[in-house]
Length: 636
Image (tube, rainbow, N blue to C red):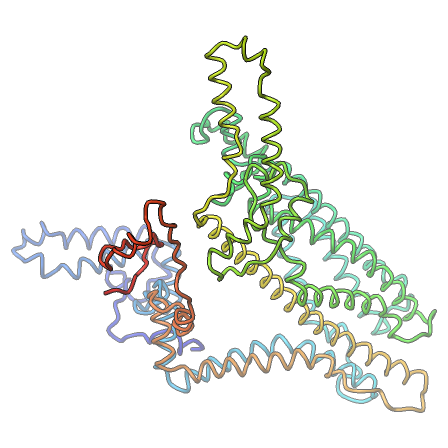
């Protein structure tokens, strides 16, 4: 009913799998797997080609019916497929739609051809879901307004009853945690999470009873479950950090295991594989990570599992520090305020919140605006053999040597490369010459040196000559390509960091807005309690949840525009993208038009080629440049 705009309509002459097997239309819940198996054997045996030939019939006339029996048995013999089939009302068309790989395209196609009434049902369904989510906050705000104004239907209603939807949601969450703890591997982290949630729900129940005057104890005593919940949460963060540190130490790769055990991992016995599973965590490296570094520890650090574990460790540590630095002062100030031991402003009570949100916003603004400054630096060029021996000063000296635009010609890159590496090459040349002078034998030694040894020394001296570090006259295309790739990767990382910082700023500003609305309402209500003659209680509590209502309204409007505005043009684009022919759309065409011509690296002419000889060559005799694969010279 609700999704009639997305799913295809059921056909009147649609194939009914139960009827095909001879089980009847109303026996879907009564028949068992054994009944389905017996009915299939009976039907398939009666339609077997040999049986049909014995009866004098033509097997081709019963081919489609035999295929329908095979299809019905395939669906009904599988419990999951049978459940889906029953869920869509025993419609073959709708079942094939759900199991189709292009279900998204099919859903949009049905949406285009659906009626306005069917589209309205879909929009109404989303509106009801949003209303159900926002119902509890709206009721709480109305209750607060009527308590402060002293009139209204909910003025005398108990908070314990007002929060019934909240209790139900918390009960479901607590039961799910208990079942997960009961049927999965029990560990201290899951146990701490269950205990933290239980204490937090108990604290909420005590607060509701206190607001309903069923309890008269001080808030400092009623906040005891909250104290326990915070301590258990910090304990859970600490246990998570220990778990991640232990997992990192156990991480290894199949290559390392094969090197240590001296045989391929596929040849391990079952006992050895079980032992490895208990003692180690097998991580998977990127394709080029194994050859990037020789150190075992560094290679493991390149794995996605290591990065995920370190991210969890960092998040847990940050949450632990934030909870202790800002959570403890906030709870202490809040208890002093509600118990009447402090008569200051609510803005001062929430000072830890302002400090935390302010520092987070400033840091993310700095990261967003200065991502190019704090981002990665691209080393222009350094020999592979020199990277391990170079210290940080040398690397910084090379990386700070200058900037080369990746889209610049290759000769500019070579000029900057030569300028950057010239001091290092001169230093290396001096060291080589000094080593050659030291290795030169004296006159007396030369006289006493056998001819074979002298020849070997001469060969060694020649190999160690500074000729091996002389600048190559030909353009270094590989270094240039590596530089372009490294620069683009660094630029992409900087853009990604900017995007994350921008989204974090939006979330923090939203939290700051909600906090300011809450504190402003508390300040107005507190001032009304101090001055009983003043009837002004400030703005309505509905304004506190107004940002959520605004977002929900925008989402509903966007959803309605998507549903009612679905057309054939959007369907064609979706079909093209699903087929792989238009993934980029018009953007790809614009990008292709903006692309510059490929850089053609042409080797310099040999010494034998004189200007006169070059001039004598005709256009047909000029060989094409050694361009990249797929280069078109445009002559045709």
